[in-house]
Length: 311
Image 1 (spheres, rainbow, N blue to C red):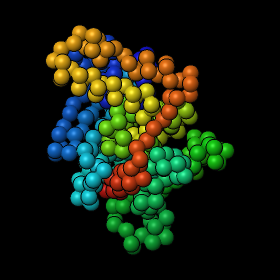
Image 2: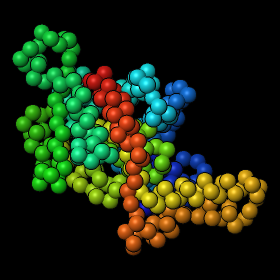
Image 3: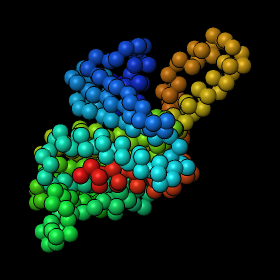
Image 4: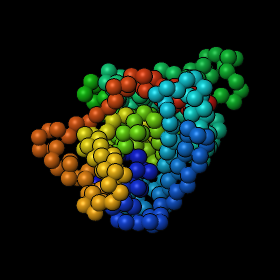
């Protein structure tokens, strides 16, 4: 299997196609793109069989990528537009995997004290919780309100408890019909940092994109359907160097019009070459942008609103 350093199924598909010189779609993969408006593009990637699963290293299922441009300067109107797209895509997956009145547990993964990893806990604070109100104050809720509960379980380094152990205990007690998990992801593209939402109905392996994989959270391990919502918050140094070299080569190509050696360098797998040079010296860092605090707040609003309206 190709060596990926990204959690996004769309990027894994593109990497595999480029590495194997595949012009059409990969066997076992189906995809479609939709331009919602000038700032938002939705791409749906479906892994349909074991060949597709093996090719991109993602389980059979649906992966929806929502790319949002100009989020750094987004106002409330732009954030609302993005959240409405998240609502639409998420609601379709929820309706596919559970009945309309089923209990939903929302889980915010990550470390609230580490900004790039704080998305999950921050989203949880803005989720509309109804499970207790349906029991003690139903008169304040709409008739068709779902029972919604939420938890931010923290991380192993601060709790000493694996996330899987925490969630499994909760599932055994409250017996939700569906779990929605929110987590920070890794991307291979600088442009996608806190500007992309991935929604998948296959669950998640926390930390996989940064080489710190924990126990899988999925229907297979928890016994109920798991929808994962992830936002890329980091890239590694080799990715940044690769993107920078590509930009440099493109600039030279425009000025020189054609250069065979530059073309060969651009087509080579520079990521692996650069990573091999960085890792022995502990220079293969995980990097996040300086505006991450503001970006996290914007994306937290997009995801929280998207979930609240979908459920």
